[in-house]
Image (cartoon, rainbow, N blue to C red):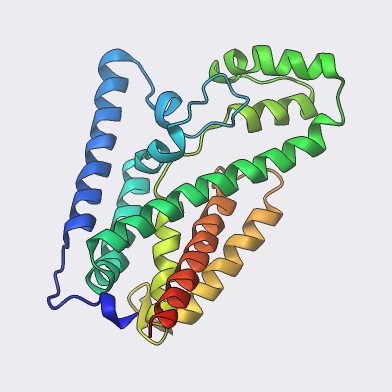
Length: 248
């Protein structure tokens, strides 16, 4: 894949710079609209399950630019800059943007699939009439800060009407790419503990898998979306490598 390496290096290449700006503008707009108009843009731009009344097809893209807090935004954007600038300089802006968008969309797809499988196991435990009531009235109840007293109905309502936001899926895809392309680069956890990039990625991915499986009570983190970004990133890199080898 050496043919994608550019002749110059930039600490803030074009796509990374614009992604930082766009994410920042989305965050500021969300705050202004929330404070001035009392409208939560997450309901419109965050990713909802398709059976939710708030689901819109564009959310599979727009959710990547929404963040729930400044710290959520900061850590995602710091990781985007830290690892993304090297990748964009290596691949070039077009290929980097394609990779970022596909891993972000892939993360959203995996999140929806995991939600679907979880719902399948839950919906079999209640009657069709009860399920219809949850799907009809659940959104209003959920957004009022309440939920059904029945634990099964409550969990179904939570899964259907919860929203996924953030660039974390694409960022995890970027982290995966960095570990694959620059496996022996030394990273420093907490600026003190050295570890090679490949081992950092493997350990981080394993931790996300464990957290996703063990997350029965819910910690409000889309672990499988993170893994989805890594999975789509792995597949995309392997396809590019295969294509590159074909023409060599």
